[in-house]
Amino acid sequence: MTNLAYAMGVPGGGGGAAGGDFSFIIMMAVLFGIFYFLLIRPQQKKQKEMKNMIATLGHGDTVMTSGGIQGKVVGLTDTVVTLEIADKVRIKVARNFIGAVVQKAPKE
Image (cartoon, rainbow, N blue to C red; front, side):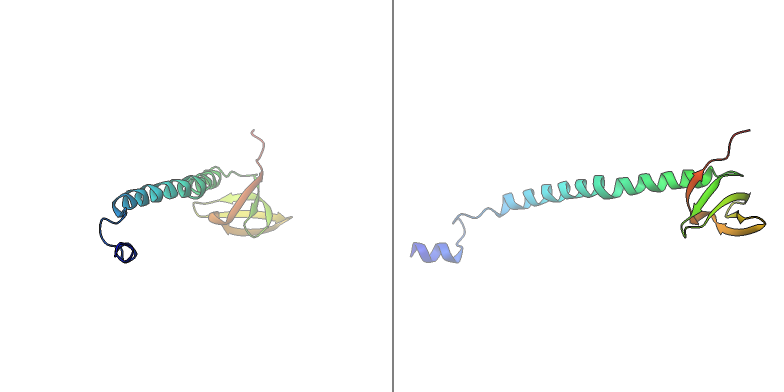
């Protein structure tokens, strides 16, 4: 009879559900910590750097758009950057689409 009771999972027969709940909570906290430090935090840092780069754009900076167009900043507004991509060829690009500053303009 004891083998049948053990196979049926009779209470008191070696359970451990109460300890399992606590270890599950600890495991989930550890997984969240790993995701935070490997995914969330670096992404927030990158967004902060991009925001700072866009805010410090100046006339004469050479920039690259997210589409790969390189040009020199000749005009700035709050939302639009005017780039000169060739002699007398200018395009307007939203500030959010500036991907990188290739070269800062020399300070005068």
